[in-house]
Length: 88
Ligand SMILES: [Zn+2]
Image (cartoon, rainbow, N blue to C red; front, side, top):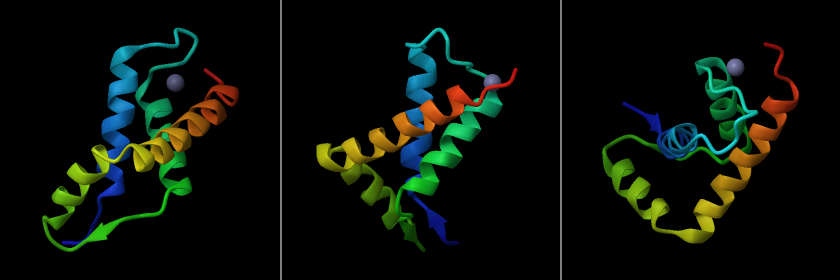
């Protein structure tokens, strides 16, 4: 099975942001969450693995501040876009 492990990284990060609930103006529904995940993934390079080596890569990226900064920047930009286009 081939999987984009960048999905795991972005979903984990967005989950944390959703649970922390730092921005009260931001809609926390499932649709907006999925919009943020999708937009973030479109900005980030995909990381495909055909085995569970992907799990090792996922652990490494969480420990890599520079790479996590890139992911967080993409998520922050996606949240800005979703926030400005919320219609519910
Ligand atoms: Zn919403």
